[in-house]
Length: 52
Image (cartoon, rainbow, N blue to C red):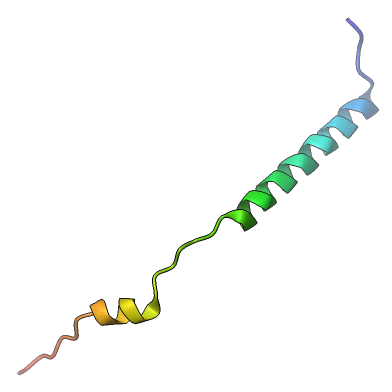
């Protein structure tokens, strides 16, 4: 079985690291979060009037 040179291991590590980082960044920026409207959130909050 042929052995791999150390420079080949480092270049392979760099290649996989770059592809992992690129894959993670594309997944991060493609994902869209659906945030609820602020108007709807304010209407659901009940105001508590304390009558002493």
